[in-house]
Length: 136
Ligand code: ZN
Image (cartoon, rainbow, N blue to C red):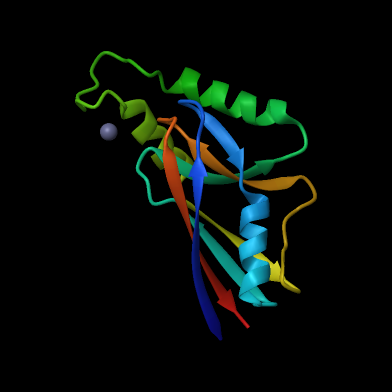
């Protein structure tokens, strides 16, 4: 059993944005040399998240962000958090801070239409993604 820790930066360009990080995760897995196991993709931020969804039609990520923003408005009567980004914290918790992907033959074992996304909810900012690759 081998464990490889890695990380990479992500620069976001908008307040709400989903950035496809599949290639970066895939490169780290290749570099680790681990053939079979799993990779934990972790977001160490409280106003961003990690998810897996369709990477073929960009309208899908647009519609996900639209839905989240209509369910969770930026400004809302009753918010108390003084930074003014309670919507971003809420979206982060709903979407979640990590995903795990199976590694088979040193490659990400994703479905045909799946990509790994870094979800920004309070950008633009410079962010980090942490990886832990385990296996043999
Ligand atoms: Zn805050």
